[in-house]
Image 1 (cartoon, rainbow, N blue to C red):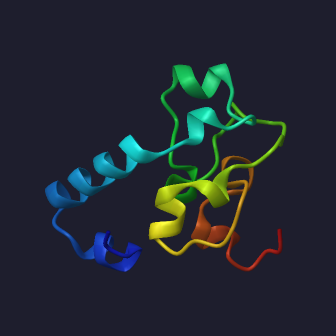
Image 2 (cartoon, rainbow, N blue to C red):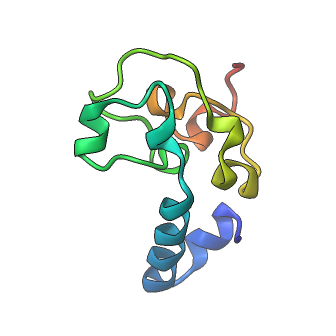
Length: 94
């Protein structure tokens, strides 16, 4: 899997294909924090796209550290659905 920097340098069609492959492996919908609202909006990959605007407001058990996308991209944070994408949360402690 390419790094975020490599993804950003890809042509748009190749980047879309990579993101689609990552979305297929994304376990966000199995997380206890995930809600019906997020499911209806098909929100996933919060580690890349950032937090949901209003679907998830309570933090329950987080499964980010078990995510294959999280591991493959070398991410270290957690609770992206409520706190924002990796780049935004990198300086915070969890």
